[in-house]
Image (cartoon, rainbow, N blue to C red):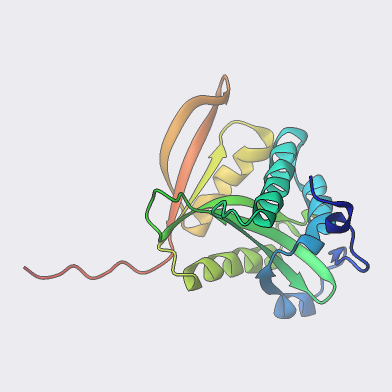
Length: 194
């Protein structure tokens, strides 16, 4: 568990409570800092149902502890902010045994009050741009079907250019399949002439 000092911060960023047109032009992506943890946990609490919420919190706490021990867990977390506000948290991981230009979405939390807004679409674009600038070629996302929280995500991903690549039947529970989606982040290389 993080120490008390890792969980406290004299002036933690606030979770966004109001969205203005100015907000869309001033949002920025920055790396996660341990001083952001209390605000990130607050965002997770409001964004996810209990079971995945526990998984996400455990992932963040494990990431912090591994970083303290100088162990690279392959995860990177980012915040989408404007001055004094956190709008979203997203994370990626890559498999150390896999290609270096492939990444997987770890978590993607958007403040519930701005979901389904233009700002949420802007935030998704910032996420894809960040990964592309990091030279990732492809992003994979795993989610679930036929579950109130996840089926909405599964319907949304194709609108952002994702393709469903695979389905693992009854993975989460009977009747709830795991779905694997992918999105190309870089233009394909031209084929060489023989």
